[in-house]
Image (cartoon, rainbow, N blue to C red; front, side):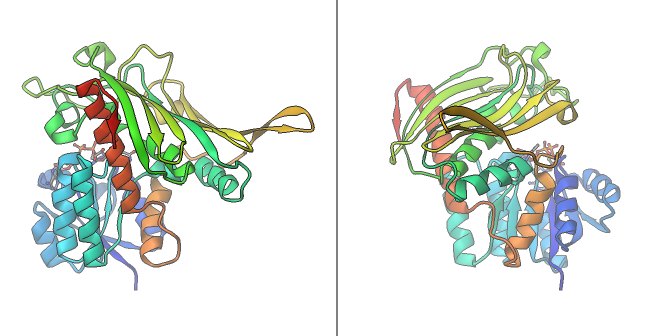
Length: 359
Ligand SMILES: NC(=O)c1ccc[n+]([C@@H]2O[C@H](COP(=O)([O-])OP(=O)(O)OC[C@H]3O[C@@H](n4cnc5c(N)ncnc54)[C@H](O)[C@@H]3O)[C@@H](O)[C@H]2O)c1
């Protein structure tokens, strides 16, 4: 019997989720969105038969095993709790929630309900990340002492006055929106416990239309724009490992770069996507490399993997289904998301207080 899934929120990622669920053998039975027209559009585009403008009605009328949540960040927690109360497995878009307190509640609720709770950290499902993780797990890298996580854009503000730029709806700007590389670095480092965070956020250019991203998100003239445009920070872990991070939507960088670089005791390495034009995946170039010393020489190894323009988004959704069915290990766990969100909370707290934060 195939797993039956309902989509909540007809956001831009719905097509990837639906494709991934289907490739793993699941059935996507309905799309629910508060905006019934958006639900109908996404359902028609992806050949899903039924639509709802009420999540509660979809949960009541359909025999679902799982849901996937693709809504603005503020609604991740309440919708996940609603689905878990109805005994559904939950796949939720990133960020997990607005804060560590929210994701902690989601994690304990999922454990009590004995249901899978996973998040779309699709960058872990990129071919480069699968390959690098295999080298790390097989001991080729040694202990990762230090890593640098970057998701930096030059002109990549996702619209003005919409939910992305409204702190109460999004939780913040690029720190929380582009948290993927912080997550990927932690994943490579075996998710150590954070101890100290020192960070600074900036809000230059956040209202400057010249820094808008290329995705055609409608601006809302009456809306709020009260989030940061960039952040720089440093995390020390209880293990003695350290992480440097840079996230930006708008900053005077040469071009958009999405990368994790690390220095291990046996090898250094890098997983990177460089963009030709900010925000346009099809202009990008992916790299996966290891750096070693061999026989007195510096050797750079290029790990060749198949290209994946979807940045792991389809593979990540497949993993959710395969994990529920016990056919693959889950690519991420709620405990990891709790640690990640503690770091995100501490970045904002450090920027606000101008002090290092003990996590
Ligand atoms: N993993 C990735 O690469 C990636 C990329 C883009 C966005 N995202 C994430 O996807 C999520 C959605 O972002 P988006 O850009 O698609 O947003 P969007 O605004 O384009 O779409 C969100 C949809 O959710 C619906 N919605 C809002 N509240 C709802 C509720 N309570 N119940 C049901 N439907 C509701 C809206 O009507 C809208 O149709 C965000 O969490 C974002 O961070 C992830």
